[in-house]
Image (cartoon, rainbow, N blue to C red; front, top):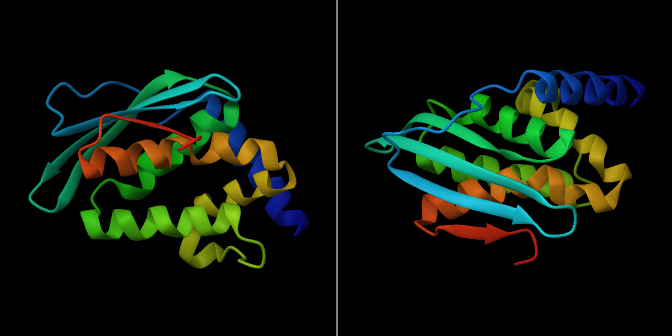
Length: 149
């Protein structure tokens, strides 16, 4: 477990310092805004699909290191995937972060497994799930979401 804790710190810091896909997307096909009223994080997710495939996934906004890193990891993991694969990954991340007894599998979850480090800090789980809630709202055609819903 010590390795996972080190991985958590390394990945969170790297993705916060140099977030991937941190920009708006002018030709998006879906968009949603998410906020975490508990800490003030605000994330906007932009999505461009081609048929059932996610061609581009970007984000922008203000938030803590965990919120920004999670959004960055999400965009890397899901660009090129199908919408159904995205829904499955959203479900997986929510399970990994919220349910006790669910352990990450580095081979399956890759860098996303690092997010499980927030389980030690329950108040920060909402920071890690914010972008994923926003993506879910965008896929459903909903414009806004909150970690309090």
